[in-house]
Amino acid sequence: MSLDAIGMNKPDIMYKIRILLLSLTIGFISCKDQKKEDSRLHIAKQYYKLLASSDPTGIEAILTDTLLTLETEYNYEQTFSLEEYLDWLKWDAVFDPTYEILEIQQEEELVIAKVSKFDKRISFLHKNPIVIKQILRFKEEKITTIETFEYLVFNDSVWIGNRESLVNWIDKKYPELNGFLYDQTEKGGLNYLKAMQLYSNQ
Image (cartoon, rainbow, N blue to C red; front, side, top):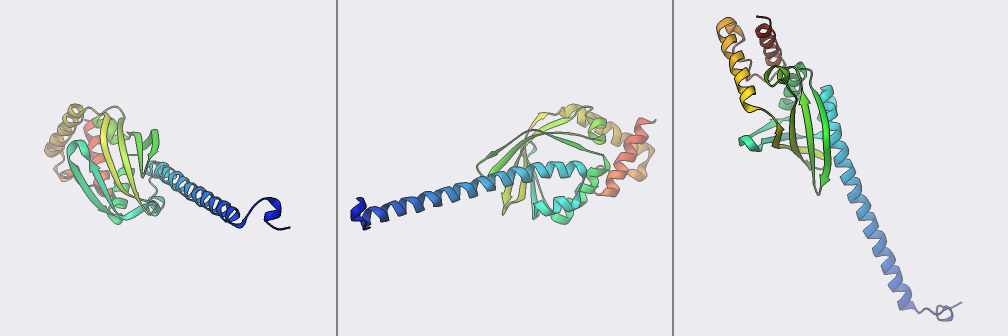
C-alpha cells in the first residue's frame, strides 16, 4: 500500500518523524537534567550525613581536589586541599558532631541547605545548636564550594565571651595547651577538648 493510498505523502511522514525525534531529544535532555538535579541533592544530603559520621573515605569521593569555603557574614574564605579538609574532618570528629538537615532544595545549579549543628565545642561555647544556611556548588557532580551565607541561630557575644574566658584561663593555668584554638588538626581538637574539660572541672 502506498503512502498516497493511506492519505499521507512523503513530506508529511518526514515532518512527523522530525517532530518525534525532537520530542524524544527534549525528553532525553529533561530526563538527564532531572538526574543531575537528583544527583546533586543526593550528594548534598550524603555530605552532611558523612560529616556527622566523620567518614573520610565517603567525603573524599564527593569533593573536588580543592574545596573553597566561604563565610559571607564574616567576609572570610579558605581554600582547602582535599588532604587539608580531611584533616579538618578529623578535628571536627573529636567533638562528636551532629548535623541535621532542616531544609534542602535544588535551585538551578546549586543546592541550598538549612542545617543545624551541635557538638561538645558548640555546647561549651554556645550552649545551643547553631543553625546556618549554606550554598553548595558543584563541578562534575562533586562539591567544589561550600558557602555559609546566613547564621539563623548564633549568639556571637555568648560564643566570644565563653571562648575568651576559656583561652585566658588556659593561658594562666595550662600554658602548654596554648594554641589549641587555631590548630584544626586531630591533635589540636584533642587539646581543645582537654582545655574545655579542665575548665569545666575547675
